[in-house]
Figure (cartoon, rainbow, N blue to C red):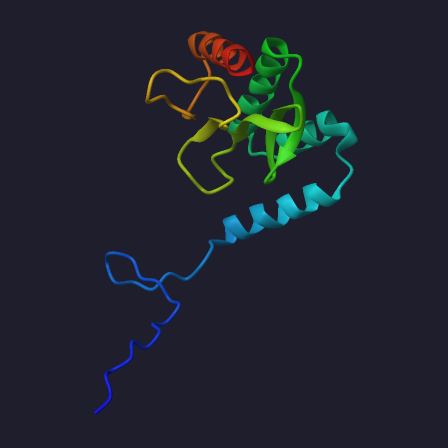
Length: 153
């Protein structure tokens, strides 16, 4: 009898609970399609695109988005607004440094201010790269302004 050969296993993956992975969520698919559209589009006017995206958000996220946009533009005027996976983002030399993800984007309970690996926020061997936002007070606005300044330093 010949030795038994290993047969390839199915490409399906399972989670720890044994459920089959079904692929990307509808929201993730939409974000990827938005990114493809962004890459094909002429991003000469990122400011208008970002303002339009913020204007289309639900009221709570829209208010935060408008305020964040103002804080980021004031704290780091060198950053260029652009869309990134359908989210308002701010880039330096064409590389996204930070972005705003509305709570509605992936149906989460809070909005997110995130920073990419291009942000200079390194602090030892561990530092945060995303922050949950439920509301913006003067304290949070001051902290965000400082984070954005540090990110582009």
